[in-house]
Every structure is written in C-alpha cells, then in structure tokens.
Image (cartoon, rainbow, N blue to C red; front, side, top):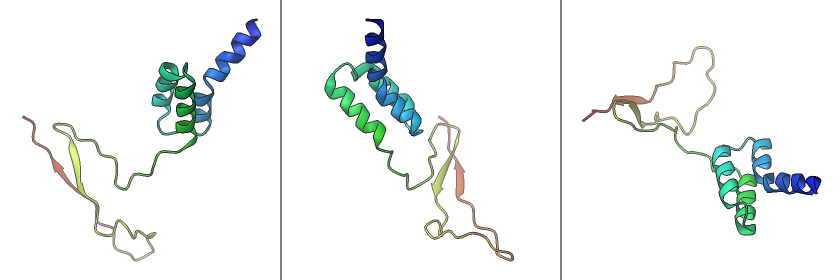
Length: 103
C-alpha cells in the first residue's frame, strides 16, 4: 500500500520533475500549478505540456521597471546583426539608460 502511494506521489509530481530536468525558465510557476491543478487530469496534462515546451525567446533584454531604477530605452542600432569583435574594431555602443523619476 505504501509503495502504491509513493508511486502515485511521484507520478503526481512528474511535470515538475520534467521541468527541473530540462531546466525550465518557469520552474517555480510549474511547481505551483502542479500542486494546485495537478489533482485534476486536465490540469496535470496542461502542466506536463507546459513543462515540455520551452518559454519563447525574448526579443529584447529583460529589464523590469520600478521607481528609482534604471530602465532600458532602446537596444543599440546594430542589435540584430551583432558579430564577434575582432582586433582593431571599435567598441560597440551600449544601450542608452535613463533614470526614472520617483513620485
């Protein structure tokens, strides 16, 4: 009986184990969804599907806005066609940063 309960618990957390093995970007959210929705078959299948599919790549740097923090205004003009620096190349321009005002 105890073996069956342990096997059911392992199967219940299988989506989280898959996400951890694949080093998923949203591992914490997958665990929360698995614990809250995994007891339903539809929720368990949805969380397993989420764990098997990677998050879409972000097109711009992830900079979150908060009062008093720096924020990224725009990527450098050559952001789409970045190539490795070679000897004698000029340094690449950095993104312009602006300090936000706090209220």
